[in-house]
Image (cartoon, rainbow, N blue to C red):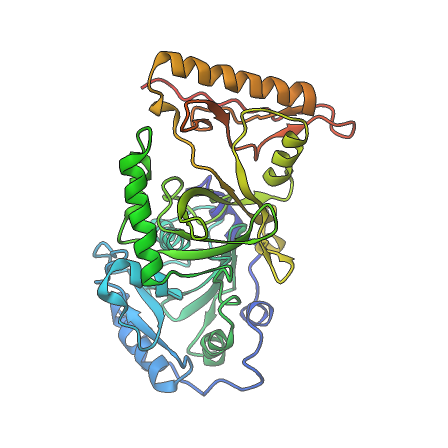
Length: 444
């Protein structure tokens, strides 16, 4: 984990706890949090679980987190603690929800993880870039939350012995507050929970362009996926993961290429689900049910670097120069909320660059391995060569990320070259490119 950009980012530029609250959690509408004492929480507990019960009870009795409940996740269906006595997880959920019926409901409703470490545990953020096993587990937990939910950011809390730290994660990294003794400064920890309850859903990190799908939408989505897999003109088993019942199903709204609203129903991504961290581009690819036309399309959801040309703009540039054998885009552009770009902000406190959320909707294409014959495979590569040649000769563009995963096949057996997010256009301002990338997967 030492080379993990997330670990390197959140180990630096910590904020004072009060500064963290004032920046990321506007005060609770001028209403002070109820007073609380954490004296029932032992400072000399022998393991993390001895801290959890009195901590949860203190928060409940003081009513500093109205509308929410804290669940001990030691035996939860999401992530186990691997019988680690030095580390326990608590999950914050809205009250009144019977969310343990299945994993999909539990993930859909999860608001915030609380990580509790034994008093003997070292401060996770006190040793440079070194990343402990516990810190790896915390990163994994938050990465899983990002993977199962559509989030712009996630808040979390770490309790280690008598100290606490606040954390805010987004795709650019994680901002961490300085540790403080919550027994001596109970107001800080009380304000953290209190202010959280006054945040809007978007301020808590949920993507406002995505909501829970209705039961009827879920049924239509899954029936369409099953029918597509069964009747597709070539092998479509690569879409099977999207039917996973342990993954929530969502409804997403975005603008089509003609400016009309497009409503998509999506489940588990069939590509890009497993991520070692919650930072970076976080590319996920979904089979999406297009409600207006009652058919499947492909959705690519990712966070693009501010330093690179937008993939949506690159596709438009290529189309303007009549480059053949490109995917058919139904929607392509940055995600806007109230006319504002959906972008990261944590880069202001770390060492990484900012990212902007982008989505591209295309007609479904098939992996290269679904070619039916050597003749068809030859035609596919002829098409790819024609695409790359025209892109360079007419549009001055190099693809720069050529791989077997980016060479796709249409239902009719023709080749298309996908994923132009690393593409580079030669211009007078940028006549020479030093970062050309060609990736060839080694033979098995």
